[in-house]
Structures are given as C-alpha cells and as structure tokens.
Length: 267
Image 1 (tube, rainbow, N blue to C red):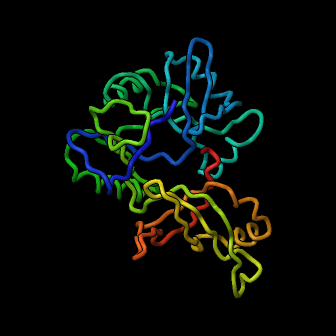
Image 2: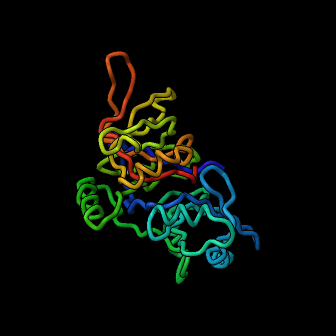
Image 3: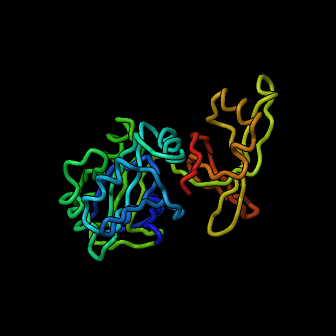
C-alpha cells in the first residue's frame, strides 16, 4: 500500500477545522496487524524485521493498518538501529494515523482509545483542534523552542489518502527535500584534501535539477566522506533549504541548501 504523504503548508490552502500535532523526526513505518500476524514496513514497502519489543505490544492491538514513525534517541540513532541486523531495541513506535474509512478526527480519537499504557507504542498527542489559524505560528515557535522540528496539520474531516495530499501539511520554517547525491567536489584551503560540497539531484514537477550543497558539514564528515565517497554517492539525503528559485533559463535551484546529516535509508 502507499502511505499518505504531506504537502508543504506554505504552498497549500485548506479550509475548515484542522488538527495540529508535533512533527516526529523518525523513520516512517507502517504496522499491519492481522490476527497473530504482525509485520512492519518502511515507506518503500521493505519489511522491517527484529522489532521484538514493539511487536509483542502490537500483538495486543485490534487488527488493522497503523501509520507512524520509529523513533530513537535522535534521527541518526533511529537510522542506525532500524538499519541494523537482528533484534532492534531502543525504539518507540509513535502512531499518528490508521487506515480505515473515517474522518481524520475520528481516526485519531480511535487511536487514543486503543493505544494506552504501552511502553513501546504511543500516539502522537493532539496539540490543537479548531479553525483558528492564528494558533499555528504560536504553536510552531513553541515546538521549535523546545527543540522540535515543526508541526503537522491534518484537515479534521478528511479521509486517509494513499498519496501526497493537501489534507496533510507539514509546517516548518525551513523546508526540506529528498535528493540523490550524484557527486562530491574537493574542498580548498584547509579542506584541500576533504569534501568541499556534494552535488545533489532533485525533482521539481517531475523534472530533474541539481545543485551544490556545501554548508552544514562537520569537519569530521568532510574528511570521512572525501575518503569514502561511496557512503554518499547514490544515496538519498534530506536537504534543508529556504526556497526554490528559478533562473532565466527556466531551471530550478535551492536557496540556502544545507546539509543536515540525514541519509534517508528508509526510502
């Protein structure tokens, strides 16, 4: 199955009552429970095995398809555990939706009712329900000041859609885009034997463009990736940027592209 994906809040419109929750910085994971059978799948439909602790608790849930994210101490810790072989411990499965024919608010209320007193499975708390858009900015800055990444907005009356939809919006001051690393460039000065930047390829309206990203790398990363370019080239990475720009020739680029050390091995 395909999961419901978010559009950008600042590039979309919506009407009516909405729900705000904190944006979870983890690995997207779909839990399928049918009888005694419990399975977990990544966004790319790859089965994730070894989630023993979460699986035991999931066996107590009603049958269904649950949508959420695996979360560890931080994003890189989550990636390391999820990508490891064998038993995977140190993760919590945070559920924010489920797949059945009902409105979003009813789906979230259902999750609150069935997910209680679990150690390794939790719901994502609702921060606001209503139609007052003035609360969005206030809650966003509150979440950011507490170290969070941003907010997610669900249209309360919307149904689950297996596609990218304006009924689910991500709200962040800076935007992010998934891009493929196609090359690296050599640095200069003290980084003459280290990575200067990476060249990433991304899609806008179905067309491919590329740009250089040289900001955000730690010094240790510059030397490591220059010595071992195979760790990056060909990988999908998440890049933070301010806005998409368009040049006179019709091409697109990213304004203020920044490396945030997120290799999206979950895609």
